[in-house]
Image (cartoon, rainbow, N blue to C red; front, side, top):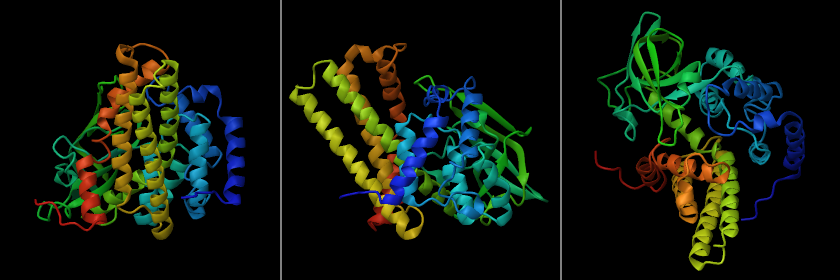
Length: 388
Protein backbone atom coordinates (compact mmCIF):
# COMPACT_ATOMS: atom_id res chain seq x y z
CA UNK A 1 0.00 0.00 0.00
CA UNK A 2 1.38 3.39 -1.03
CA UNK A 3 -0.24 5.89 1.31
CA UNK A 4 0.60 9.43 0.15
CA UNK A 5 -1.03 12.55 1.49
CA UNK A 6 -2.46 14.90 -1.15
CA UNK A 7 -0.87 18.36 -1.58
CA UNK A 8 -3.68 20.13 0.30
CA UNK A 9 -3.09 17.91 3.33
CA UNK A 10 0.61 18.76 3.26
CA UNK A 11 -0.24 22.47 3.15
CA UNK A 12 -2.45 21.91 6.16
CA UNK A 13 0.48 20.16 7.88
CA UNK A 14 2.59 23.30 7.52
CA UNK A 15 -0.09 25.32 9.32
CA UNK A 16 -0.34 22.77 12.13
CA UNK A 17 3.42 22.79 12.64
CA UNK A 18 3.56 26.57 12.70
CA UNK A 19 0.84 26.81 15.34
CA UNK A 20 2.35 24.09 17.53
CA UNK A 21 5.81 25.66 17.27
CA UNK A 22 4.39 28.92 18.58
CA UNK A 23 2.00 27.68 21.28
CA UNK A 24 3.24 24.28 22.52
CA UNK A 25 5.72 25.50 25.10
CA UNK A 26 7.96 23.35 27.30
CA UNK A 27 5.52 23.82 30.18
CA UNK A 28 2.86 21.97 28.21
CA UNK A 29 5.21 19.34 26.77
CA UNK A 30 6.35 18.44 30.31
CA UNK A 31 2.82 17.37 31.27
CA UNK A 32 3.16 13.94 29.68
CA UNK A 33 0.45 11.27 29.91
CA UNK A 34 -0.33 10.89 33.62
CA UNK A 35 -3.13 13.10 34.94
CA UNK A 36 -3.03 14.52 38.44
CA UNK A 37 -4.80 17.22 40.42
CA UNK A 38 -1.53 19.17 40.75
CA UNK A 39 -1.05 19.67 37.02
CA UNK A 40 -4.75 19.84 36.12
CA UNK A 41 -4.88 23.67 35.86
CA UNK A 42 -2.02 23.62 33.34
CA UNK A 43 -3.72 20.88 31.34
CA UNK A 44 -6.95 22.88 31.28
CA UNK A 45 -5.00 25.94 30.15
CA UNK A 46 -3.57 23.93 27.24
CA UNK A 47 -7.03 22.62 26.32
CA UNK A 48 -8.35 26.19 26.22
CA UNK A 49 -5.33 27.27 24.22
CA UNK A 50 -6.20 24.64 21.64
CA UNK A 51 -9.83 25.73 21.72
CA UNK A 52 -8.86 29.34 21.09
CA UNK A 53 -6.85 28.19 18.07
CA UNK A 54 -9.83 26.15 16.81
CA UNK A 55 -7.83 22.90 17.02
CA UNK A 56 -10.46 20.93 18.95
CA UNK A 57 -12.97 18.95 16.92
CA UNK A 58 -11.33 20.03 13.69
CA UNK A 59 -13.29 17.43 11.72
CA UNK A 60 -16.65 18.52 13.14
CA UNK A 61 -19.04 20.32 10.77
CA UNK A 62 -18.63 24.08 10.56
CA UNK A 63 -22.27 24.40 11.59
CA UNK A 64 -21.24 23.16 15.05
CA UNK A 65 -18.04 25.19 15.30
CA UNK A 66 -15.53 22.76 13.78
CA UNK A 67 -13.19 23.35 10.85
CA UNK A 68 -14.85 20.56 8.86
CA UNK A 69 -11.35 19.23 8.22
CA UNK A 70 -11.04 16.32 5.84
CA UNK A 71 -10.09 12.92 7.16
CA UNK A 72 -6.59 13.36 5.72
CA UNK A 73 -6.21 16.69 7.53
CA UNK A 74 -7.35 15.07 10.78
CA UNK A 75 -4.71 12.39 10.34
CA UNK A 76 -2.07 15.04 9.67
CA UNK A 77 -3.01 16.91 12.84
CA UNK A 78 -2.85 13.73 14.95
CA UNK A 79 0.59 12.91 13.57
CA UNK A 80 2.02 16.39 14.08
CA UNK A 81 0.60 16.72 17.59
CA UNK A 82 2.39 13.58 18.75
CA UNK A 83 5.61 14.39 16.91
CA UNK A 84 5.69 17.83 18.55
CA UNK A 85 5.41 16.26 22.01
CA UNK A 86 1.85 17.34 22.74
CA UNK A 87 0.57 16.18 26.17
CA UNK A 88 -2.26 13.78 26.83
CA UNK A 89 -5.49 15.66 26.27
CA UNK A 90 -8.08 16.24 28.99
CA UNK A 91 -10.93 16.66 26.52
CA UNK A 92 -10.67 13.26 24.86
CA UNK A 93 -14.05 11.95 26.02
CA UNK A 94 -15.88 15.10 25.01
CA UNK A 95 -14.14 15.67 21.68
CA UNK A 96 -13.57 12.10 20.55
CA UNK A 97 -16.58 10.24 21.92
CA UNK A 98 -19.52 12.32 23.13
CA UNK A 99 -19.21 15.11 20.54
CA UNK A 100 -19.42 12.85 17.46
CA UNK A 101 -22.27 10.92 19.11
CA UNK A 102 -24.26 14.12 19.63
CA UNK A 103 -23.53 15.29 16.09
CA UNK A 104 -25.03 12.06 14.73
CA UNK A 105 -27.82 11.39 17.25
CA UNK A 106 -28.31 14.39 19.55
CA UNK A 107 -31.15 16.91 19.48
CA UNK A 108 -30.58 20.41 18.16
CA UNK A 109 -30.78 21.76 21.70
CA UNK A 110 -28.19 19.23 22.98
CA UNK A 111 -25.84 20.22 20.16
CA UNK A 112 -26.24 23.94 20.89
CA UNK A 113 -25.70 23.41 24.60
CA UNK A 114 -22.80 20.97 24.74
CA UNK A 115 -20.76 21.15 21.54
CA UNK A 116 -19.49 24.78 21.80
CA UNK A 117 -17.99 24.46 25.32
CA UNK A 118 -16.27 21.22 24.29
CA UNK A 119 -14.75 23.00 21.30
CA UNK A 120 -13.58 25.87 23.53
CA UNK A 121 -11.92 23.44 25.94
CA UNK A 122 -14.16 24.66 28.76
CA UNK A 123 -16.17 21.54 29.57
CA UNK A 124 -14.63 18.21 30.60
CA UNK A 125 -16.52 14.91 30.28
CA UNK A 126 -16.00 11.35 31.46
CA UNK A 127 -17.56 8.05 30.42
CA UNK A 128 -19.92 6.07 32.69
CA UNK A 129 -20.26 2.65 31.07
CA UNK A 130 -18.47 -0.13 33.01
CA UNK A 131 -19.80 -1.52 36.29
CA UNK A 132 -18.43 -4.00 38.85
CA UNK A 133 -20.72 -6.72 37.47
CA UNK A 134 -20.86 -5.51 33.87
CA UNK A 135 -17.43 -5.01 32.39
CA UNK A 136 -17.01 -7.34 29.44
CA UNK A 137 -20.79 -7.91 29.31
CA UNK A 138 -21.78 -4.26 29.23
CA UNK A 139 -25.42 -5.03 28.46
CA UNK A 140 -25.70 -6.69 31.90
CA UNK A 141 -25.39 -3.30 33.62
CA UNK A 142 -27.61 -2.70 36.64
CA UNK A 143 -27.46 1.08 37.09
CA UNK A 144 -31.07 2.18 36.74
CA UNK A 145 -32.85 5.40 35.90
CA UNK A 146 -36.53 6.29 36.19
CA UNK A 147 -38.37 9.27 34.82
CA UNK A 148 -39.87 11.33 37.62
CA UNK A 149 -41.69 14.34 36.23
CA UNK A 150 -39.19 16.49 34.37
CA UNK A 151 -36.06 14.63 35.45
CA UNK A 152 -34.35 11.25 35.44
CA UNK A 153 -33.48 9.79 38.84
CA UNK A 154 -30.39 7.54 38.75
CA UNK A 155 -29.19 4.86 41.17
CA UNK A 156 -26.22 2.53 40.75
CA UNK A 157 -22.46 2.39 40.41
CA UNK A 158 -19.86 2.82 37.68
CA UNK A 159 -16.21 1.80 37.91
CA UNK A 160 -12.93 2.45 36.03
CA UNK A 161 -14.30 5.91 35.19
CA UNK A 162 -11.22 7.79 34.02
CA UNK A 163 -10.81 11.39 35.35
CA UNK A 164 -14.30 11.44 36.93
CA UNK A 165 -12.83 13.36 39.88
CA UNK A 166 -11.69 16.10 37.49
CA UNK A 167 -14.71 16.23 35.17
CA UNK A 168 -17.90 18.27 35.17
CA UNK A 169 -20.21 15.94 33.21
CA UNK A 170 -20.56 12.21 32.60
CA UNK A 171 -22.42 10.32 29.86
CA UNK A 172 -24.10 7.35 31.52
CA UNK A 173 -25.67 4.10 30.39
CA UNK A 174 -28.57 3.20 32.67
CA UNK A 175 -31.37 0.64 32.53
CA UNK A 176 -34.70 2.40 32.05
CA UNK A 177 -36.89 -0.56 31.06
CA UNK A 178 -36.56 -3.72 33.17
CA UNK A 179 -39.07 -5.65 31.05
CA UNK A 180 -37.22 -5.26 27.75
CA UNK A 181 -34.38 -7.56 26.59
CA UNK A 182 -31.13 -6.46 28.16
CA UNK A 183 -29.78 -4.76 25.02
CA UNK A 184 -33.01 -2.82 24.48
CA UNK A 185 -33.82 -1.52 27.94
CA UNK A 186 -30.82 0.81 28.23
CA UNK A 187 -30.75 4.58 27.80
CA UNK A 188 -27.91 7.07 27.27
CA UNK A 189 -28.06 10.00 29.71
CA UNK A 190 -26.02 13.19 30.13
CA UNK A 191 -25.50 13.86 33.83
CA UNK A 192 -23.86 16.75 35.75
CA UNK A 193 -21.35 15.45 38.33
CA UNK A 194 -21.52 18.34 40.81
CA UNK A 195 -24.62 17.33 42.76
CA UNK A 196 -25.43 15.73 46.15
CA UNK A 197 -26.51 12.37 44.70
CA UNK A 198 -23.07 11.52 43.28
CA UNK A 199 -20.05 10.22 45.21
CA UNK A 200 -16.71 9.88 43.39
CA UNK A 201 -13.89 7.76 44.88
CA UNK A 202 -10.38 7.45 43.49
CA UNK A 203 -8.89 4.06 42.59
CA UNK A 204 -5.10 3.61 42.55
CA UNK A 205 -3.91 1.24 39.82
CA UNK A 206 -0.89 -1.04 40.23
CA UNK A 207 1.28 1.41 38.27
CA UNK A 208 0.56 4.06 40.90
CA UNK A 209 -1.83 6.15 38.84
CA UNK A 210 -5.03 7.64 40.24
CA UNK A 211 -6.98 8.46 37.11
CA UNK A 212 -9.55 5.66 37.61
CA UNK A 213 -12.57 6.30 39.80
CA UNK A 214 -15.69 4.68 41.18
CA UNK A 215 -18.84 6.75 40.73
CA UNK A 216 -21.86 6.07 42.96
CA UNK A 217 -25.32 7.37 42.04
CA UNK A 218 -27.82 7.62 44.90
CA UNK A 219 -30.84 9.54 43.69
CA UNK A 220 -28.73 11.61 41.29
CA UNK A 221 -30.78 13.54 38.75
CA UNK A 222 -30.58 14.99 35.28
CA UNK A 223 -33.14 16.80 33.14
CA UNK A 224 -35.64 14.68 31.21
CA UNK A 225 -34.40 16.03 27.86
CA UNK A 226 -30.77 15.08 28.53
CA UNK A 227 -31.19 11.66 26.93
CA UNK A 228 -29.44 10.89 23.63
CA UNK A 229 -31.84 9.13 21.31
CA UNK A 230 -35.05 7.65 22.65
CA UNK A 231 -35.46 5.64 25.87
CA UNK A 232 -34.14 2.16 25.12
CA UNK A 233 -31.78 3.35 22.36
CA UNK A 234 -28.77 3.42 24.69
CA UNK A 235 -27.09 0.32 23.33
CA UNK A 236 -27.08 1.72 19.79
CA UNK A 237 -25.72 5.03 21.08
CA UNK A 238 -23.02 3.27 23.13
CA UNK A 239 -21.84 1.18 20.18
CA UNK A 240 -21.55 4.34 18.09
CA UNK A 241 -19.59 6.07 20.86
CA UNK A 242 -17.20 3.13 21.19
CA UNK A 243 -16.82 3.02 17.42
CA UNK A 244 -15.56 6.60 17.44
CA UNK A 245 -13.15 5.71 20.26
CA UNK A 246 -11.79 2.63 18.50
CA UNK A 247 -11.62 4.26 15.10
CA UNK A 248 -10.05 7.61 14.37
CA UNK A 249 -8.76 8.04 17.95
CA UNK A 250 -6.26 5.29 17.13
CA UNK A 251 -4.21 7.50 14.81
CA UNK A 252 -2.38 9.52 17.47
CA UNK A 253 -1.90 6.42 19.58
CA UNK A 254 -0.18 4.66 16.68
CA UNK A 255 2.25 7.57 16.38
CA UNK A 256 3.08 7.26 20.09
CA UNK A 257 3.64 3.54 19.73
CA UNK A 258 5.96 4.11 16.78
CA UNK A 259 8.04 6.51 18.89
CA UNK A 260 8.06 4.05 21.79
CA UNK A 261 9.22 1.22 19.52
CA UNK A 262 12.08 3.43 18.28
CA UNK A 263 13.17 4.00 21.90
CA UNK A 264 13.15 0.24 22.49
CA UNK A 265 15.41 -0.27 19.47
CA UNK A 266 17.78 2.35 20.93
CA UNK A 267 17.82 0.53 24.27
CA UNK A 268 18.72 -2.75 22.53
CA UNK A 269 21.62 -1.01 20.78
CA UNK A 270 22.84 0.82 23.88
CA UNK A 271 22.94 -2.42 25.86
CA UNK A 272 24.72 -4.37 23.14
CA UNK A 273 21.83 -6.72 22.37
CA UNK A 274 21.07 -5.55 18.83
CA UNK A 275 23.20 -8.29 17.25
CA UNK A 276 21.60 -11.10 19.27
CA UNK A 277 19.45 -13.13 16.81
CA UNK A 278 16.78 -13.72 19.48
CA UNK A 279 16.50 -9.99 20.10
CA UNK A 280 16.47 -9.24 16.40
CA UNK A 281 13.66 -11.78 15.86
CA UNK A 282 11.51 -10.14 18.54
CA UNK A 283 12.23 -6.67 17.20
CA UNK A 284 11.31 -7.82 13.70
CA UNK A 285 8.07 -9.32 14.99
CA UNK A 286 7.19 -6.08 16.79
CA UNK A 287 8.04 -4.04 13.69
CA UNK A 288 5.77 -6.24 11.57
CA UNK A 289 2.99 -5.83 14.13
CA UNK A 290 3.40 -2.05 14.04
CA UNK A 291 3.06 -2.04 10.24
CA UNK A 292 0.02 -4.31 10.38
CA UNK A 293 -1.60 -1.87 12.80
CA UNK A 294 -0.83 0.94 10.37
CA UNK A 295 -2.53 -0.95 7.55
CA UNK A 296 -5.45 -1.63 9.90
CA UNK A 297 -5.69 2.12 10.44
CA UNK A 298 -5.87 2.63 6.67
CA UNK A 299 -8.70 0.09 6.55
CA UNK A 300 -10.56 2.08 9.19
CA UNK A 301 -9.95 5.28 7.24
CA UNK A 302 -11.46 3.65 4.16
CA UNK A 303 -14.51 2.65 6.21
CA UNK A 304 -14.94 6.20 7.45
CA UNK A 305 -14.65 7.56 3.91
CA UNK A 306 -17.40 5.21 2.78
CA UNK A 307 -19.86 5.50 5.66
CA UNK A 308 -18.91 8.64 7.58
CA UNK A 309 -17.93 6.79 10.76
CA UNK A 310 -15.96 3.66 11.76
CA UNK A 311 -17.66 0.32 11.34
CA UNK A 312 -17.26 -2.87 13.41
CA UNK A 313 -13.88 -3.40 11.71
CA UNK A 314 -12.52 -0.86 14.19
CA UNK A 315 -12.55 -3.67 16.77
CA UNK A 316 -9.65 -5.25 14.85
CA UNK A 317 -7.59 -2.16 15.69
CA UNK A 318 -8.38 -2.54 19.37
CA UNK A 319 -7.32 -6.18 19.34
CA UNK A 320 -4.09 -5.37 17.53
CA UNK A 321 -2.85 -2.43 19.57
CA UNK A 322 -3.75 -3.81 22.99
CA UNK A 323 -1.91 -7.08 22.43
CA UNK A 324 0.98 -5.48 20.54
CA UNK A 325 1.73 -2.98 23.29
CA UNK A 326 1.68 -5.71 25.91
CA UNK A 327 4.24 -7.61 23.84
CA UNK A 328 6.40 -4.50 23.50
CA UNK A 329 6.37 -3.80 27.24
CA UNK A 330 7.22 -7.45 28.00
CA UNK A 331 10.10 -7.39 25.53
CA UNK A 332 11.72 -4.22 26.84
CA UNK A 333 11.31 -5.53 30.39
CA UNK A 334 13.24 -8.64 29.35
CA UNK A 335 15.92 -6.41 27.80
CA UNK A 336 16.42 -4.38 30.97
CA UNK A 337 16.19 -7.26 33.42
CA UNK A 338 16.27 -6.16 37.06
CA UNK A 339 16.67 -2.50 36.02
CA UNK A 340 13.07 -2.57 34.79
CA UNK A 341 11.93 -3.11 38.38
CA UNK A 342 13.28 0.23 39.61
CA UNK A 343 10.24 2.16 40.71
CA UNK A 344 11.86 5.56 41.01
CA UNK A 345 14.44 5.59 38.24
CA UNK A 346 14.38 8.50 35.80
CA UNK A 347 13.99 8.51 32.06
CA UNK A 348 13.34 5.36 30.05
CA UNK A 349 13.64 2.95 32.94
CA UNK A 350 10.83 4.60 34.84
CA UNK A 351 8.69 4.71 31.69
CA UNK A 352 9.32 1.02 31.07
CA UNK A 353 8.19 -0.05 34.51
CA UNK A 354 5.05 2.03 34.32
CA UNK A 355 4.29 0.91 30.77
CA UNK A 356 4.65 -2.77 31.66
CA UNK A 357 2.24 -2.52 34.58
CA UNK A 358 -0.33 -0.33 32.88
CA UNK A 359 -0.33 -2.43 29.70
CA UNK A 360 -1.93 -5.28 31.65
CA UNK A 361 -5.19 -3.34 31.41
CA UNK A 362 -5.05 -2.81 27.64
CA UNK A 363 -6.91 -6.02 26.84
CA UNK A 364 -9.65 -5.16 29.34
CA UNK A 365 -10.61 -1.49 29.09
CA UNK A 366 -12.46 0.03 26.10
CA UNK A 367 -13.93 -3.43 25.48
CA UNK A 368 -12.07 -6.60 26.41
CA UNK A 369 -10.32 -8.72 23.79
CA UNK A 370 -13.00 -11.38 24.18
CA UNK A 371 -15.69 -8.82 23.35
CA UNK A 372 -13.69 -7.51 20.38
CA UNK A 373 -13.34 -11.05 18.98
CA UNK A 374 -17.09 -11.54 19.25
CA UNK A 375 -17.70 -8.26 17.39
CA UNK A 376 -15.27 -9.22 14.64
CA UNK A 377 -16.65 -12.75 14.39
CA UNK A 378 -20.32 -11.81 14.36
CA UNK A 379 -20.42 -8.38 12.72
CA UNK A 380 -17.43 -8.53 10.36
CA UNK A 381 -17.11 -12.21 9.44
CA UNK A 382 -20.81 -13.06 9.80
CA UNK A 383 -20.22 -16.03 12.10
CA UNK A 384 -23.01 -17.36 14.35
CA UNK A 385 -23.52 -15.51 17.62
CA UNK A 386 -21.93 -16.87 20.76
CA UNK A 387 -24.45 -19.00 22.73
CA UNK A 388 -26.04 -17.08 25.59
